[in-house]
Image (cartoon, rainbow, N blue to C red; front, side, top):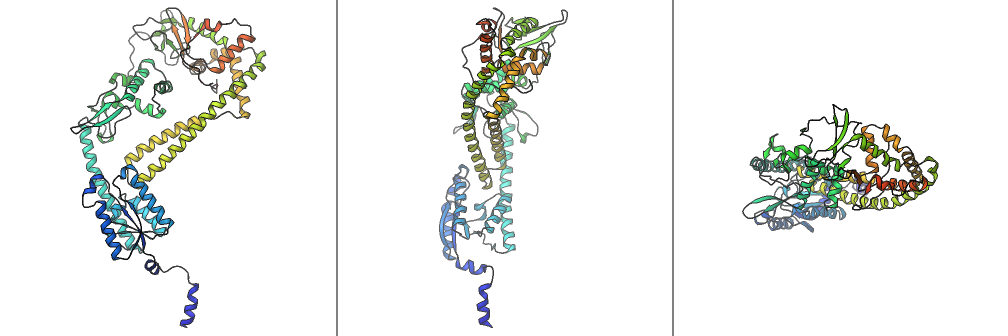
Length: 534
């Protein structure tokens, strides 16, 4: 009977866990401290290593590698070591990770429980020298999980004390964390301060451009980029909404209270409120219209003297509309009828006779093909940027799992990376035109140029604004003194249309320059596509 049992045992399934533990006593060692200061106390890396080596010697464990061994956990070395250790253990099928205590392995509670379960399922058990627990049974796993939760509880208590200290500083007008874009945190032996840097000076200009000129955020971004500060669309929006720049402190810990900060402010409170459309003042005695078809050139025409947008208003006694510069030092005002007549003549210059449609189509096709080359280069650049951000997001998640950063910091950077990704994806949506779509774009442009003046005359305020900026992306400057208009940029496609129109329609050469002078200070940019719906 015994002989039969011995022969039949070869058909048994599974592995005796006790036999496995006895046969394979290989392990890796993991040491860790959270801060540099801990290197000198009783939880130093050397203290942990000695205790673990002694434990392994007494219990016949064979050490296959040492990992961790750094106090720079907040600077990615610790994360890299942890990931490297796990990969090494899985690759070489090492069943044990030995640590000094479970809090040296992780202090993130639920994350630590999840991670330890994943390791157990991969055949890797965590052994604590100071907290010997048998995790091969449910009771031991429960005990280990409880210790992980106590580690999280201890972290939460420390965080609570830290938050109390931060709140006290905030109430005292001192910003306690990393300063916003435009400021530097400067520390000396005697005190810490927040100072304005070169980016801050540019951000100050951005607020003034928005407040005084009323230009779009996109135009502000372009100006900042030209001066060396590239900034995402969402980031600029957040800057304009952040009262820190006007000297105030707001924070979730302040429970809705606003504190006067001790840091240097970039702008006045009046400018901040004006940028956020909270100052609705009219000191000139005339009525303004936000969206009035009678004055469609407002927020498009600019004073050539000071650069501010002209505003539209009506003189009720006469029933006439005018455009006027709000700068009190300027006397730039003009009859709306006169400026509308002049703009109509400008539009006529870019309107081509339908009989020449085929000739123009050939020229436009060549232009769009040239434009595609530039977009293809941009697409490659944006795709590479997207890959880099995806790597940063993966690294951020790893650092959060390995408790190198807290949840607040994780969410802050994740929000930033997501905003950057959205901005890049928007740019990627401007992909090169496929040959199958090229004809549609050309036909759309031709249809627009043939009916340009009529479409502008019949459109509402919003559509007129879109059409105006499509032709002249930088707007038009009006000089009251010499009664002339000028622009710094014409849409490349319509510039081509105007040139061909002169040749085909026997228009007077140089007629456009009589209507609107071209500035040569700004270089031409890439072709803009017609806006759908116009």
